[in-house]
Length: 403
Length: 64
Image 1 (cartoon, chains in turn orange, yellow):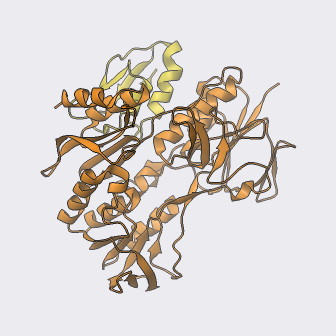
Image 2 (image 1 turned 90 degrees about the vertical axis):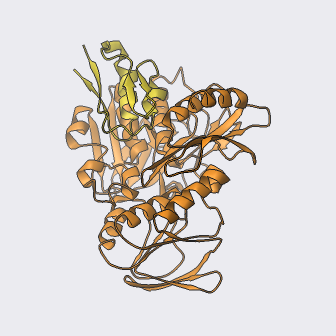
Image 3 (image 1 turned 180 degrees about the vertical axis):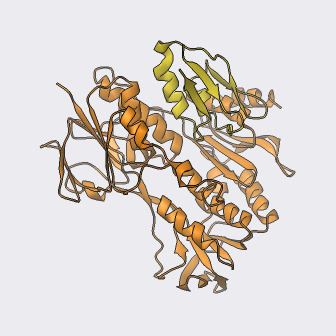
């Protein structure tokens, strides 16, 4: 009998699961449920090329109607899932429809954490195409942009806003905010890059309050000083979208808990993929949740395989990998680059376009992770070594040989 | 016979293709993809379809 797979979530994890099911030879029905009314789109360009007006919305689509038809992916868009009944094998949608499934895939992703300040306009988050459209239009105005939170999203938005000619002030409670993700040296180098491009940084300062409206915002910092801004963008992390699973019996503390094969704990026939998944990572020996694009794509392939070949399930233990593009710099991160306090830097970190890698080690001498600046070839080697459990010394030797 | 193609101008050196299919893709010193093989068999398609879809900027295609 033909099986039906219902995938809840129309972003990269969901779309790639649907496509990978066909690549794996799945012949049953594939239904893709998405809460947004528009065709699935890709998120990485939203803080970069889309804001810079280099890409229009057609360029960010993950799936066209033709491609969906070709792969027989039934689209159910503009329909939020509101509950999962694992006993009846049914998913209920906000419009009252109930979808029967043989296998359900939870791919509902995560949402931008909302700022706690109550302003009626001018304060943005950056997560959805709608968010990016609103900010893109707002960047037409004059006046400074306050970027609150200087992680990858904040830094990319700062670079895009600056490139579009806006004054930018970046605020973050940490003295070296990107150092938390990349290690102190590369974190400092990127902050310097932003300052060279004219971004004003107010690091080591939290935001106490934002008031006013678009064009006339007042951002009050921890030291009592006030920044005048026309727009503000708040990038303070995300929260997994698990609200609809309350009452499903699933464990949804910080994402849906799943085993090493990405099967939801405690219930049958439910898989979890992407930002919303907190699965058991065998190599790390713990449950982890990862918010990277590549993770969503790789986990989707694994989930599709496990749905099609339930008797030969694969454990998912990919190496974490993320990138960020700011101005003409390329930042790439693999594994856990800040796993230890001590990183070893290879290459040259000074100058206009440095090329270097910072490598961290595990206590047992294996490579834990690396942050790489403008050096994709080194990244390839490091990522490979991380996958095979290579040593820190071996990694240093290999990367040095590329110099 | 399916043929692997790459848009070298689009490639940004994200290197996901190399991770997914190291016998077919590599990277040069400038961080641009290198095709190690171009002609592939039908049996190799599933792996390469995944590799092509792992490119964040859609720089890779398979021509049939």
